[in-house]
Image (cartoon, rainbow, N blue to C red):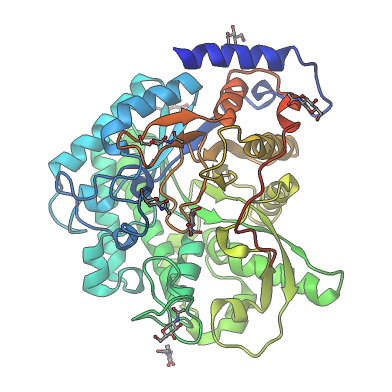
Length: 500
Ligand SMILES: *[C@@H]1O[C@H](CO)[C@@H](O)[C@H](O)[C@H]1NC(C)=O
Ligand SMILES: *[C@@H]1O[C@H](CO)[C@@H](O)[C@H](O)[C@H]1NC(C)=O
Ligand SMILES: *[C@@H]1O[C@H](CO)[C@@H](O)[C@H](O)[C@H]1NC(C)=O
Ligand SMILES: *[C@@H]1O[C@H](CO)[C@@H](O)[C@H](O)[C@H]1NC(C)=O
Ligand SMILES: *[C@@H]1O[C@H](CO)[C@@H](O)[C@H](O)[C@H]1NC(C)=O
Ligand SMILES: *[C@@H]1O[C@H](CO)[C@@H](O)[C@H](O)[C@H]1NC(C)=O
Ligand SMILES: *[C@@H]1O[C@H](CO)[C@@H](O)[C@H](O)[C@H]1NC(C)=O
Ligand SMILES: *[C@@H]1O[C@H](CO)[C@@H](O)[C@H](O)[C@H]1NC(C)=O
């Protein structure tokens, strides 16, 4: 109960510190607006070869570092009750997690693993018992290795049927309690990074574009094929849900989109045009088909034959297939025109360079207007669909202090940005902080996003609340926020910061 007293003390000190001009509280959000936090299966569960689970493509990075790895990760598989209690104490409305496909259906297709089924039923029951709404993502990067071995994963259209059949099991088994389904996590980022530069599994790429030495892949075609198949798998799954389950289960289904905000690097016309082109390539790639049934014209023109076509039937299937859009936003970048000769990869097709993208390593700057930019852009260009922000957060060095004031500053500013957007008419209905606790961040385990610190050297994987956990809890409880005393403390310097 130590936590509780700490909470009361912190909340009181916020409450009595006076109002700032930019103060707001959760009571300023519309009724029913959902606040939650998120994790993903592979990064949290551990227990990779327990109770019948088979490897996913992410298991190849499992042994990448001592201490933090996917083998045990946060040991969420065994500690889920304890974690749900922490969520309850924090006051979360909702929790976003993903299902490990190869835990539920170990070979990717075929028999269901009863122990996998039991785990997710228990987790969902525990959440509901504590009044926490589950938001489930069907696939968060961890495709069953068996399907990658059999046909190369997302590059083959066979994946569409396999994904739909897997989703069918999830709807049938969990759909009476789960009302919010996201099909695929960050399809645009996965296509670009996993199949473009091979940085993370699936590790597909071809020279000269790889950031690693890939043994398979084709950088100039596969990212487009893969995204196409992801959209079709999403749409096929959404159709199944609507035809077979929605009337009975009354839930909704959407897809997610990784969304940088981008602004021109200089005031030149070239950079302005390049920025629009980059928005079409990064956001339009996913959103245009969902709203208009095809890719943006500029992509058709530049990518040509390498960009797959939708048949009329497929176009109808994809169009309007999402009840909501899941937005994943961390940072704003500059965009500059890039007129180097095309090497036939995604970035040179886009003909724009993303400056300070810095592949995940550095502390993310606080530019909350970037999130407003994304939400406004979606509102104006894509018919103002219902939006859930499914990931937003700031990394800090895992080994730095529990006093993560930089994270508090970020969350405070970004939640205010969401409020501004809602006031300007965005249909944003929920916000999920990433991540509830420090996870196995396989791209760089030294930078974690948790509200709770997890000691990965401790066999017990002890969780300890950071300042941000207290802050979010106060916010969720409706306390007026004025964290002046927190802002006073400067964040520790971060190794690994790269400026371009
Ligand atoms: C939450 O707010 C209520 C008043 O609105 C207060 O009574 C309660 O102590 C707060 N709880 C915590 C944990 O701060
Ligand atoms: C790996 O473990 C060793 C021994 O426990 C420790 O000294 C070292 O710092 C660890 N390395 C990392 C990257 O955590
Ligand atoms: C790929 O392999 C070659 C030859 O072994 C090596 O010189 C090169 O540095 C490797 N590249 C990367 C990105 O690992
Ligand atoms: C990639 O696919 C295209 C189209 O099929 C082909 O022309 C090109 O040679 C392939 N590139 C590699 C590296 O295999
Ligand atoms: C379905 O959900 C809507 C909105 O959440 C709610 O108003 C309605 O009562 C629900 N219907 C059933 C049959 O549960
Ligand atoms: C993480 O930090 C450890 C110790 O500070 C360092 O040895 C290691 O190289 C870092 N790993 C990465 C991926 O930067
Ligand atoms: C993490 O756990 C290890 C092993 O129990 C312990 O020695 C270490 O002090 C802990 N580190 C922190 C930061 O709590
Ligand atoms: C804020 O900064 C001032 C001046 O550096 C310092 O005296 C004060 O103790 C700080 N307050 C907190 C809460 O850290």
